[in-house]
Length: 349
Image 1 (cartoon, helix red, strand yellow):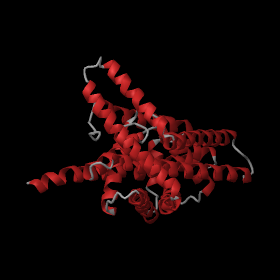
Image 2: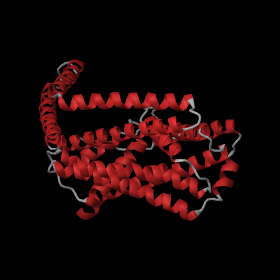
Image 3: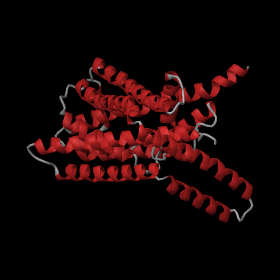
């Protein structure tokens, strides 16, 4: 199993540029230009913004500790530092390979299995469990957003419908994940079906390779389902990972809140709850754009403006927030990737 390797291609460079251009073109509809954003950003309180940057790192730390706790429950031991580095590596892969967060999860599975061979099934169970817990929290936050909207004096139909749509969609996906995680025979049928398709396409030329792949995959699948059943028997093992993910969510909500405070604007937590939850759902849409540029920014600006935040503040807060949640993470994720891959080389010398 090879880890996905990011490559600097024309698409990797061009699509983010198009996304950035689309965002700035879009905000012109709000009569906001780049100079106004720069002017507003220059007034930001550095203490509040520095706190937002720090919280960005804390958010990733909580996520890494949550994953490590799940791995520990499955008797897969890695250090906090390695889980933190692997998480940054996965974030980097998610950002440069547009694949609905799958690239980062595949990367983490590969890294743990490379370090501890034969643990792929348990590691898959750990990332699937973490995703299930994360989606459950996302649904809970969306429901809280709906409750807050009912308390508001006027409910924006667009926002309300969007929240309901994403809540239903995420809940449906969550149910599918739970069923597949429990039904081992379903996974076996899916794997056998894919192997048969591969054998048909290759016209039997790689029969031995496919046979070996089937055996290895089914072995990992059994390990995965055994791990998921272990969690079903001992749900208390998920208490610590869930607490860490809740803290991760609180941290993610604190970032835009602190950014608004740095701009001298007191924003409602309702706005933060709703916007953050919808953006998480939007970012999972496979638009095929590296660095997630364009769609999240447009979504954030639109939601902020539709909930009463002035257009100039909305656009500036979006840009400053994305510096923390995107561009800083690209840099530190790349640094983690280089450290993990190059350290063994230097040791060998």
